[in-house]
Length: 206
Image (cartoon, rainbow, N blue to C red; front, side, top):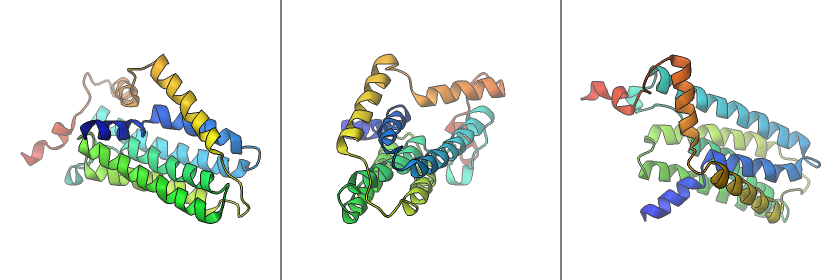
């Protein structure tokens, strides 16, 4: 069961999911340029919010002790911002009903990825829930404004995106994790020798 949660967490990694989504959505640029642009802008803002929250804690120790919050879960945010949109885009090729089912499947997958982060003790409930909320806002903004006419992504485009992303992510830098880069950034910006940890946030509880 542990390996299942590890796999589920892996499909929510930024280094896999973001490049895959970019490659896939390139097939929509010609027909849905405005939609892709809105998603890119919303995702960029959400990613910045997540990054700032992580830098603030890792570099300076700013968190929210009362809810055990050290930064938005990147896995949860990215998954909630991307998978429901991909699900809708896949289903919308066939029918509006299929698009709704695709959105629901994408949302459930994002929630499952959030749960995997809890099971692996990578995040607290507040970090996962707030991460899902931020990503969900991005998805909602895009999906509510999706044009009424039927256009979407073919499964082949999504599969190609994931294959190219996986090949690049796990061959060029197989041991690199996004969080490692964030830690380096936090230490460079703050001048600290070591990043703050959750134990420091919860020290007053002991």
